[in-house]
Length: 215
Image (cartoon, rainbow, N blue to C red):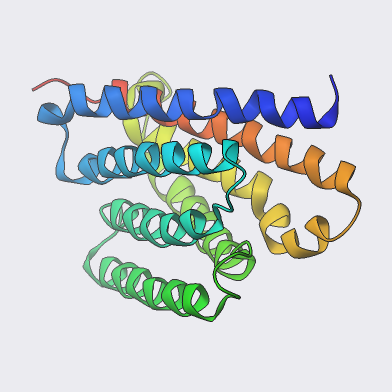
């Protein structure tokens, strides 16, 4: 399989786990806690964004502006989700960070060259923030869960998704401009890797949404 066809393959299948996650979230939203509703909102917004981005990609229209907008919303919703895992002081701090990131994302969006470039800076910052928060909550929360019920917790699957995805893509986002301006074959291969981990990301989130207890 050539590099281009590999990217096309993942571009085709990448929206599927997002749409599946959105469908599961909407079907089970009546049982979702206030915390888990942020994840439902995330996957619904992600499915809409991915459909728009994919249609623009197939029409060979630059879709980088979608990434700018989605990054802002994604980081905000995930930080609001994580805030439920902390006590009041830490919760307020995370909410402040979420709004600061919204401001940063808007500045990055406006200052980009007509918004045609990848938002490498805000993506890199998002990765750093979410990796740190997910690691903190991993050590804080997982010790309170016994091995017998660990896999039944929606948070376990969502946090695993965040940690795996943003860790795997942190270097890609941080150095995306250098990668995209270099050899095309390398850029396509790395983009295929990004799409692969995005598929893993939403697949794990889907499991987490499915694990939400019915009340």
